Figure (cartoon, rainbow, N blue to C red):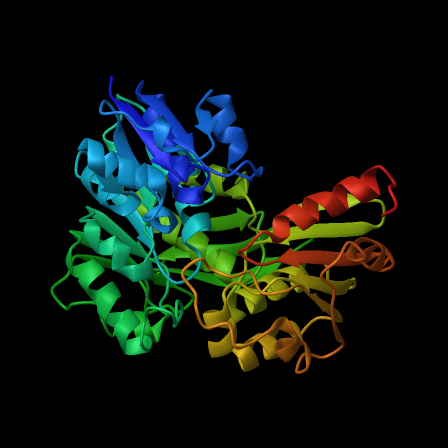
Length: 437
């Protein structure tokens, strides 16, 4: 049994990795702030101790894994002084993935849902190793499979050499690091080259043009030029339906409890990957039809006459995709968004795109920008965005609760990658208990 200490254990990826190692029977502990996160529950279930940051948490016996935001933490400095074995999250994940037949899921959008879809399909008949960016992670000594989410930020995914690389799409994001879309393409191209096989969205032109001709590859999409494709798309209040074709042969009708075109792409990626791993098509269809959503990905609650959704969308295209999904499921309801922009750099870069996307709903409320610890350029405020969004107000205090309550028979969407979900939970507690603030 090895002993691990995680600095910043409540982070989405860090908590997933901690859970995986705990399942393997290793001793796992960590440190973080006292605040409750959506990742806390899975750590508590495994009885993983979490301490306040303190150099006394560190001893020579520990293998230390440090979160990306905690490189300057006192515990990291102490671990270096003691000569501990130290890894960043992505360094350790790269080392771990080499021990398995690995499936790495990347892309600018849709990574978490696609990884979770693949995990649920592969787990139907055996317990596998998995790591998902919503705080879910699990390990099984007997499985040779490892499916994990591979983030492109800072080119971290270039530490991985997967047997199968799944790439959902390419878009310009992380403007604090990537210079332009060509820089993004360059990173993804290298990631694809490092894999043995690639499963990719063949409708994405930015992605198609970087796939090497001699690569072992399988495409999916809505166009019949792809190896796997969907036709005859429809939906009702509960499911989206489509006809699945493989190399122009009709396979069967697929139903997914998700909405929006992006959800069809994500499900197709999971179908391709699962069939390449010799999964039975009937099992695949059953798992997709019964898919349990990832945390904070179109997470729905219905209370009284309101539908409340918590969603991780933090890029203009993701916002549009979420709104499309809401419109598909609730075409006749009023839509209200409470949005917290994530990082100053992203807000500056995509200001007009955010305004265009947010203006697609009936009413918008904004919360102040959630800053990254690494940011220094804070020359913009949420008010700059509010000025160019249709029917928009800024609310940074507790009055948001009564304001949102006034939108009866509406869909209320809490949206962003920061801590907006905390305010969603407070709101839900308020309306369930009929509290006034």
